[in-house]
Length: 588
Image (cartoon, rainbow, N blue to C red; front, side, top):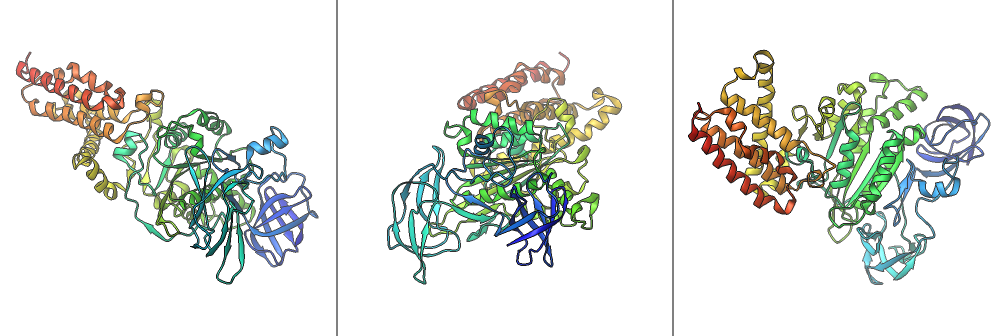
């Protein structure tokens, strides 16, 4: 079915003669067959957002509908790949058209020529339903790709093959309850705006280990949780996302570069293939899918890129994997919504954003979670959604930040003053929060005992006390404080500099295991307790300058396998030196 264009306004095209088309249908626009999607219908007139540059397009050009919603192809070949916002493979487009992407180019998302070794997991005659695994493909050395029965299908396996196949070739035949045969290949197509189904949803109760001490100890996120990383320009949002992508203990990472600068995405593309996965020693790209839709690429495709990424993540979740979706940034995605809403002449809401901004954000974040997957083998998978927010001027009272804060449960507030002071990660410990602390407390206490969370609560209390004492120091100076308050200031400084601050360029400090984090914070608080016990009889300045104090400051550089022995040695030395200062008296 086809119609005729009557109006072109940037990425918005209005066409008439499409009475039988539906909202969300994919259309081909003009002689170059540009890809677009119907936003709304009024009679036989359709408003279409085009995902490519529309210059040169004018009234009278033909629009043809495909009758299908915007969908992604799911199957072997997605890992290690780089897609644009509508799942077109950029390396293959480059090989076809050169450095600049030609308009209207059509390249399948999955390689149709590459053959994969398919190993059956079922026998002929077996009854299967949606989500059941019928076979496996070793997609990369890090990930075993499970070929599943499409969600809405069930029946008996009539035949299944073993050997090398392309994604389009039939690997099994399923006979449904009506006796109709269905040929199954390794591709599933799924509309991006429709969440993939699951059996049940569970409360997230296990933390996602990021190796970043301020995140894992003070503001943890659960696997299957949601988090926002807001901050002004230059505060390190992208750096935090990169660190999470590198070190998080998830099986798959889906990184969405949504409307950010091209050079930042280039850093990811150049760096990730050279990085080694700390869990298995393989290149990090072997468990990563990259979606690049930078600020110079079509605005409308930005809006689709978020849904493309989360749908790919849900597919890997359905195999029983833990997946992290990193969206950088949801503010640019919201700007794309605002631009399309303005061109549709909809009533604007606050700051020009559409009235449905909050509900669209919720639709994205609500697709995160820990789920019981479809299928008979009781798989569990999770999708953790982490979105960067780029409020203009760092003002988190603007609509995107406020709508995001109402939805997500973890808020890592980045502070430009910390970034300029070279304190990374530049997460402000006074304005950030995590609502998963109580949910995850049983896990931490089960692994490390009650002391882990007690230390965490004590550290937060010390940091808050320091903020209050800073006001007094600004007025009368630090010398006017009591010895106990001076010790609080010193302990807070140690927590900030020796515990929270990390250097991504030093191997021993870029990643910290839970055990190392626990022992490091415990050592700082042991110092505080030992000093507090003798504060009435000892010279405070001498307590702050004992030799062990410097060793505590360097302790975060200790190699993982030497943590226990080295930290015990430092603590013993520290206690001996503090006792010596106390016995020396206050006046010496």
